[in-house]
Length: 151
Image (cartoon, rainbow, N blue to C red; front, top):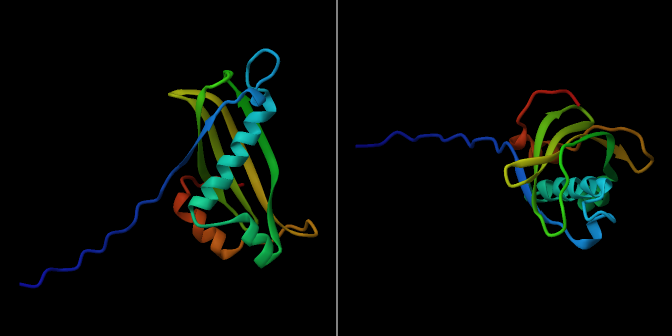
């Protein structure tokens, strides 16, 4: 008896998680993470999400002469992290457009959300002109697309 082939569709990966440890250099005089450092944590997590998806910023610059830059960023701070806290940065692709990617990021300590960040990344030439996202970038982040919002 011949069995029918079953085609299994891969399920989209809704979020990427990156772990961060708070070091002394991340804190202010009060012992809490300095507000701007959350943006650095988010940047590292975005880079690692792309790397885990098989996409590398350096290759994009070298091969295409293109870069991803922050066009818009909003952050809502709920609670502070402290020295030696173990944090997780969750990154979700919320939307793709011709030249931009919309990302939602949450920085958490356990189940507690400390900071929520929404960032629009624009694809630009070395001269700073907006241009379409490379197809291989769309292919890399497409499976992580969890939303339908416009960047």
